[in-house]
Length: 311
Image (cartoon, rainbow, N blue to C red; front, side, top):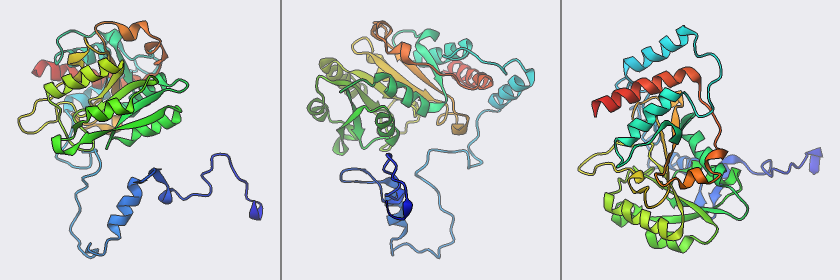
């Protein structure tokens, strides 16, 4: 190349990140933010503080703090010096039991610790489940609009992404016709996000049932992102997709970040919500292998047990 510059195979040296597109016809989020900031209608001399609405991190605000008992649990675990070594890849058994109990209270059946894998936050759970599904010629269905980490994880695993539409006129419900049109024999799973990110939708029992029946018809695993579980407003209750796991296998993703307001502590989980045992019979579960910081499991245990006790 000119000036002795080396051309790398990654092809990123010729493109500025601010100029990159997220896909054909789609502008990257950072580019859109820059466009909004440069809008002439914005008064840049206005000194009033801005309230950030685009980032799911409550920790900068003093009104939002997690339970003092959780902090004490972490401090005590560290001081005990009992948790400085390695632990099981799936996570500490009592913590996995607590997650199983926490999710089971919303289901018509009981989960066990064997159904639970603890992760370094929700993003690791996403990457783990996506990479476990990757295989030659496979594709996965993602919602549009949706959460960009799924697209990134699929690209990293060389898993083809096909987007299905959400219907704004129906409260951002899944467009089931779009799902059927997007799926084929190589489709391995469908992602749903409930409560929705970024649209804030909360799906009804009836709609989730239709999603389950469509997935069953197409032979798809349902991956249900429930990071915002129980954060609902108005009259709509939160319903877990796992309620319909007797009809279609469901993998549930969750974390402590939103409901317990500790996103920086990176505590998440991946749960096989599968009473029929289809996932256990497949190689899917055996591909999952990770572990979180040992001492943080005591935080997880303390918060989830208190949540279960308060229900």
